[in-house]
Image 1 (cartoon, one colour):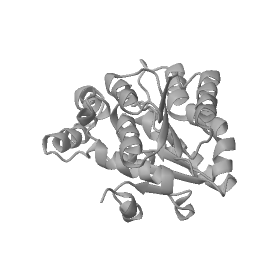
Image 2: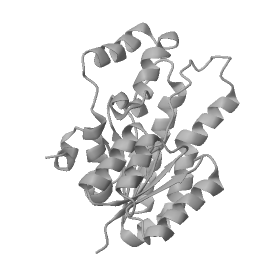
Image 3: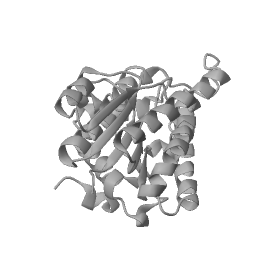
Image 4: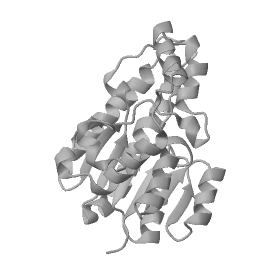
Length: 262
């Protein structure tokens, strides 16, 4: 059997980069990465895994481009066994009634965090049906939360989870699983991403108590190591059982125990 092939969006930094590394180095998988840019860290992986890594630069809000990238990945390796939907944005953080954030801004936000998922799923389904593969939706506790100033993010992750549940019902041979990675220290992956945005920009738009909670978690070393959660996501994209389809799990819950690094 050829090594499995996993397509991942948002792979150039943070969680996506950690998942890509794990797939290549720890799971012997072939990987198609889709991201807006190619970071030095991703370029290094290309040098180390030239035969098993295909990196494609693409704006995921560009429907034809994203469809083409996924088709190219399948044609290159001959199959798709897993799809990891990781690309997302938190910024801008703002109250729902913030006049500086227009309705068009909300629509653009959902183009990234939600509608790109639909495009990627549609393009991947033929291959995933053939392989009886898996789709991992990188979600958030925000999907069931109500953090002040996170209206767009909360809503987009709730919509993601609903999409995963519906897909599980419509595609019973494919595992569709939404996963909350926790508060991840993306700076460990050499990038200042979501947690840094929260600590820096969040103070202006979040409740003081919420903001302090995130800052304290960082100062106390309580953030999740991206390499740990990255391993779990990678393993689930290859081995998640049908018993988990349609569920929303936290990366360190009992359901994911067998998929953690030993």
